[in-house]
Image (tube, rainbow, N blue to C red; front, side, top):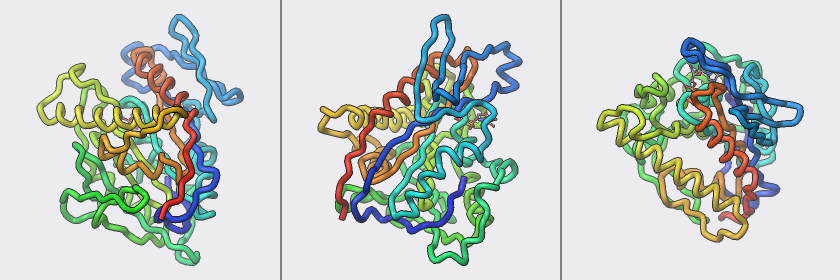
Length: 325
Ligand code: ADP
Ligand code: MG
């Protein structure tokens, strides 16, 4: 997904009406799952914005919107992302992030799959950016084993982060590429996606092992999957990755829990690199869309219910507007 141009936000000014909207996207059954005799345990109602899990008892979850398995990328963009583009054009910040178990469709949804350039449908993204008064820059980085790497830099050097006034965390020396057309933007996205660390797990052959963060004027965040360390056979390197992925996601869930609890004073942003980088996206100066991705297969029912619970909870988040210097 690429967005129309606007003014890059450097965390200045007072955010108005900051909000978190929570969406669920269900993907189709994959060939491999069908082959293993998986059955579909999800019923999705776009009209009532509900997802129902049928695993003996019926469990109903309600969201701001839901996308059933045949929803196109364009439709997800129009319903979940386009409203944020409008906010960015009004000089406010916006973040989109995808959450869900490995193989649930996060990378597919965020367009950060290496095959993205072949399967994209760019009708929502067309346009020449050179004639607009605003400029668009892109940075693409990944958080891998608690370290930030620049995916547009010629060599793979770890980057340092620093906390600015107001607590927003920035990455020092990350490359910012100016983008003049949608094609240029897609080329950069493809370049960054290729360099992303990809390893194979039993859960998903092309499981992304890192959290990718793309700063446009909108931030798009493609989280790594919630890995069951110990559940699958992992090499030493994969084990370390799994622990670190869990560390980022555990910290993220604690931050979301604190933000959705009006009596919790302290928000533990500092517990992982991921939450430090996302602080300004979740703490109150940003409009955030969280897209929870789920698999329809009965094998995944526990992870699916966990994801839906977590996402429904996130609807309680009331971002706290704050003045940033
Ligand atoms: P994740 O990033 O959550 O681990 P992926 O995005 O890599 O998962 O998706 C896993 C597989 O499912 C991929 O083969 C992908 O092409 C397919 N897939 C995911 N979402 C969809 C969708 N909405 N429609 C069709 N195929 C999908
Ligand atoms: Mg992925």
